[in-house]
Image 1 (tube, chains in turn purple, red):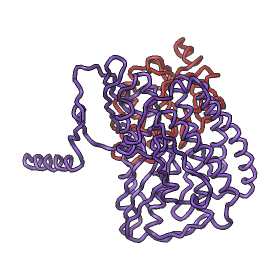
Image 2 (cartoon, rainbow over the protein chains, first blue to last red; image 1 turned 180 degrees about the horizontal axis):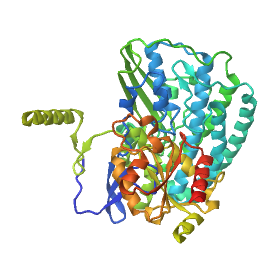
Image 3 (cartoon, rainbow over the protein chains, first blue to last red; image 1 turned 90 degrees about the vertical axis):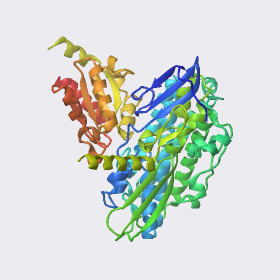
Image 4 (cartoon, each protein chain N blue to C red; image 1 turned 120 degrees about the vertical axis):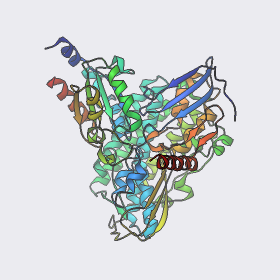
Amino acid sequence: MKTVKINQPVIPVGPLHPLQEEMECFRLTVDGETVTDIDMRISYNHRGIEGISQSLQFDQVPLLVSRICGICSASHPLAYVQAVEEIADVKLPDRARYVRTIVAELERIHSHVLWLGLAGHFIGYDTVFMWAWKYREPVLDMLEAITGNRNNYGNLLIGGCREDISDDLIPKMLTDLDEIEKKMDMLIKAVTDDPVIHARLKGVGVLTKEDAVRFAVTGPTARGSGVDIDVRHDDAYAAYDELDWSVCAVPEGDVFAKAVVRLLEVLEAIKIIRQAVKKLPKGPVKTNVKDIPPGEGTGRAEAPRGETFHYVRSDGGNRPVRHKARAPSYVNVPSFKASCIGQKLADVTITLAAVDPCYSCTERLAVVDKRTDEVLYDYNMLLKLSREKTEEIRRHA
Amino acid sequence: MDWRIWSLKKSPWVFHVNTGACNNCDIEVVDCLTPRFDIERFGMKLVGSPRHADALLVTGGVTAQAAHRLREVYRQTPKPCVVFAIGACACDKGIFTTGYHMVGPVDKIIREIDPDAIIVYVPGCPPKPEAIISGAIKALSAL
């Protein structure tokens, strides 16, 4: 790891700044216009969700984990309920698997188009921002028609889905999908052929395949660097293994490649939804899960940003004794170390946005020395310090 | 009517503060700016600095890390200003009430430094853009 001279100017970005919606702090060490080092500070959004989750009952937790991140509010509960279903060994009704797939893919479209709009905004191209968000609205309407809410669908239960897709809705969904696909096609052609976007995004913030593997990035960040991992394909859940679709991977690794991956995934998602709606099996959409036996389970889901992983341990009671969530941005954010250094300052904003970071998902604690990149305090060290402090207090008391 | 209130009602510029929200209220706030809802037609505009703002759109239940930053942002905003608590978390901490790291809600933090602050509550998880716009209009017409 490399050492940074202290007398180099540092530009702080954040914690509250107009670039991104959430609180986060980047301290960019610059040499003229060139960024030589980056220090990321997060945890402003830490809400202690894992702790709250252990005080809730199993069936209340999906509503909580859908609020880990509002944009991934189908993926986190999906990973959670899969973990619990693994413990209880639930056989899901076929219709539930298809409804889950449809909601998850609608969420992917809305998230990717949202990212495209924000990316346009970050490079000062507000036309893209307005267009993308305009064409995202029909997707939100469809989600509202299915689940009753534009965001935070709360549609997942242990053993199925809360809301079913009514038969009257299906013809309208198919015509709406055609309309959305037409709009998306137009938008994607406009964006990928635009010389301004080429000039701003091509060759910017390159994350090589080696770095992508070294930082273990997931989701479109990895697929934009030519690493074709996708939980939907590698460890198929819901109904993905019964539908015809392909993993989109592009080898370049720059911001443009990540944008292309996301846009191609939008088209794939439309394809998946159309097939799932047509093949939607008849039957109930939920089963009754009586109790959760002791045991542990894991669930994985491909959120729009990458792999979401949940671990749940049960002792046979009515609430989880341990619940661990790992969000995709947790592994994607450190890759800024590889992609931002050596960039011009003006390009860093879009490079930071390119992994579609989601800080509300990610908040953890570790203390790292900025100069040496050495981890000063990890979990064991903090535990040791805490015990020493307790001893000291006892001595004085 | 005080001329400052009169001028505030004409075209409020808003600054968006996330104090530990889950992003949902934030994307609905941004949604208000985009073509379907387009609050800019009412003269409302999102600005990049609290010093330019007439209103603060606060989302999230205020985490321990965010509390003093929220106070600082409120101090920096020219008075009179309106604070909008957007979403269930900002109104009463919502689903995160029992979280050890939550020190909010928003009104408690703001009232600590200014007991007379004008605070508008827009509940919902997340509130729809229509609700945010309606909250804004109601607040401005009540001033």
